[in-house]
Length: 360
Image (spheres, rainbow, N blue to C red):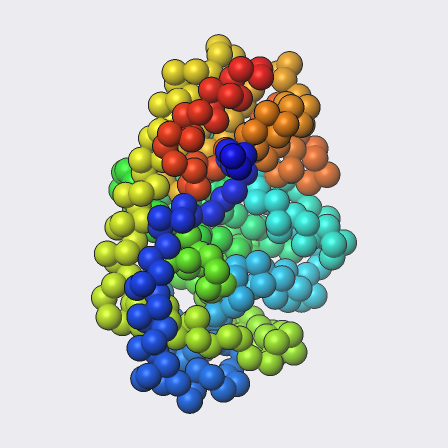
């Protein structure tokens, strides 16, 4: 039997509505096949850009539909580091893939500590006061990867104030915000700030299907030309068929019902993991309790080496991601782990947690 994966931050197979997506793709081809089977503009399929622009209250030219969110992150980081060289501030912990991209590009990355309510803004302000050139802040404020934590509205307002005071560009990454199970939605930083210093990015990977590879960025006016140039010189034209498929999904009113179904499937998995952790984990262990998203953060007793535990767990048939992968140069997180609850069934989640506990 396949290993139980708490490492895979992907929707469970049951979340992928193959028949619905196939029907939307067919309808898109029948409606606009000549356009979507030809080269297009670097920014993506026009009708989808217009729908997303309307949602965010911006001109369509400011919306770029990218090949997944990471492709857009590469564009953003390259533009920012070229126009405004300096350190990149990130949450500690943060998503590991941008850390790899920034390391490859030779950027200096500074982690800013978090607490149970997300980014610690006192720590951020201390970094801003420290001086030196800062290129931008990368933040995942809602159901953060890897911690599952969410930045509250008041902290978001203060972050907007700090951005204005220190002229701080912000990249707000929000692929999980729509996947909420409990509690009330919070306004995006982009919405509170007005989109002058804040670039907003999201994705349809967690709400529709990751294989479609559709992310999008809402960029400030000053970055429009840089995104246009980078997109055209990277791939000439994105793949328009998946983008037109998602547009059809939205246009026919099927996105919301599909999202409700996905939320229902994932909520039972989140609840199963929280219940299993509460029942099984020994004293000295703590974890986040997210209201949405795909992940939670687990802190073992300080004596536990997560890398060593991972090696034994993998042999025993359960995997996770060690916490140190989410810090620059593995500077922290030695006794921590990211657990994804999105992929496995509730039964396998309970089995996997029990197996991990047996190895502690």
